[in-house]
Length: 85
Image 1 (tube, helix red, strand yellow):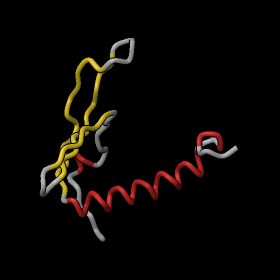
Image 2 (cartoon, one colour):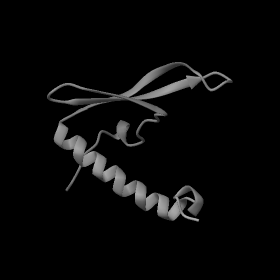
Image 3 (cartoon, helix red, strand yellow):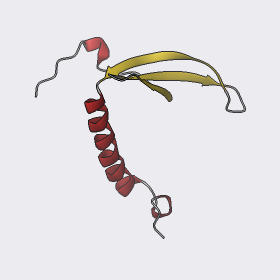
């Protein structure tokens, strides 16, 4: 599949938080860039990107994230963090 992108989008955006909402027909994920104080408490933030998607796409996204997380954890995380001893 060929995917086209505006050159200004190729670098993506940074997000360190997300908020999820849903209605009967769609899910909305707001990716946020939050600022934190010295105690780690969020003090403010900026919407980095809002994504609206169908429930079907949400199920596909969950499966893709689970699959990729498993592969990442197997390669990159120490056994004690993967529940192994």
